[in-house]
Image (cartoon, rainbow, N blue to C red; front, side, top):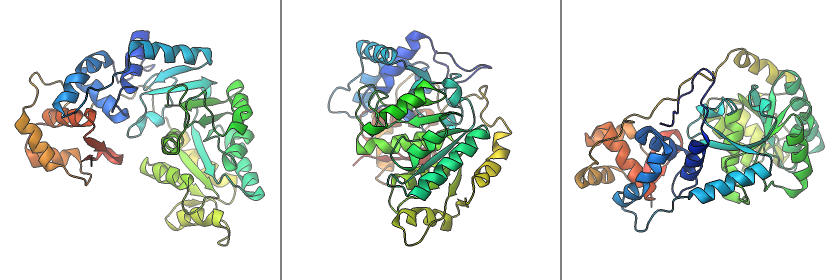
Length: 380
């Protein structure tokens, strides 16, 4: 059994389990939410891997599903070892405690550096790549004061605000979340900064495979890491359409505090941050504003390692797979509009276990979309 619940000191995966987890998350159509549902339903990654071909076929796949091999998993583990990194599973003691609480937390993180950085309360700082001198200076001030107050500073290693925040917190601890593999940092000019981070009091994290070069569509996944690891997020200089605003929206969805630094309405770099303030973000005009707002959250162990991961409803495996008629009822109930799974259960009158298993089949066959908040819809 692969326990997705943490004991007093957290889960510790065996090497065999770690390989199976890596194979499962690297297989086709398996995202974090699908991974967790599979573990909850089948009890282990090995059992889930064995079930994937049948699940995919029952879901209507037109071709065989690609399942990552043991050789592939071993090669990635060896690449991590050569790079001085390792994989940490959700629920293990070194996995960021706040991150594991978000919807669709990555089951495995590649990490390199000082693991202590992931065990302290954290705050994210993001903003414009084309930062002004004043913006970069203020980002450094916030990062420095938050670090001195005991917070790890999380950012995305980008130019501008991210770089200023990382550099100012090198001495106190910083986490760089990457959009590509740990061995494919972006931008290239920050490779030396990343080495300073991982060689000192900081940590680099990524959910992407080693050797994976970041693409534009990978950066929202990096933004989820930033938003999920921190108790709050500070946005400094962000345009009206920017990745920083995506990170802020995610932070709000995760129940994190969202802070914004006001700027001139004549500066396009401040249109996004000013908009956040209109939408209810907390205003920041001094680093103390952030430290004081986070203090009540940091005083309590909001994410204890002994907290059990809640299994998905219907987590017990069905002895008899659902029939085609049940499958058609669910397909007919779904459409392009995202809906809650509980609504699917009520609408169809099927048991929770049957609905969850059929949704897994559709997901693994590439016919289901999963959305923020646990909503689902049929693929186009």
